[in-house]
Image (cartoon, rainbow, N blue to C red; front, side, top):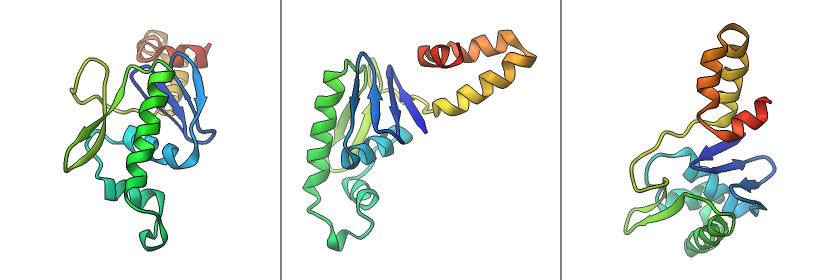
Length: 142
């Protein structure tokens, strides 16, 4: 599945993240990124740790989440992302959209793509409107 926020797209299957450039995200940080992109709220460190390692008794210390977030922040900067990972002290982490902390809807790109393809056949002007939600969709639909 491809998730998108701001100018960033993340392919959960391949682990590739794209904005100005493309990079591969290792599995651990990739899980953290996927959870944060799917959520419009703050996600606790414990919830992220549970998602990475189902059985925390056998998993590493909770600080590994902080390390993964640090790696993701560097990666987002390196690829020219217009989103960032914010810290809510005592609560967890979240995605900060471009231009501030206003919540932004997360819509998987695949759903928009499927809707645009179906609508292109029956209502081309509506399909163009859906395509306008992201330049990556225009490339996929071309």
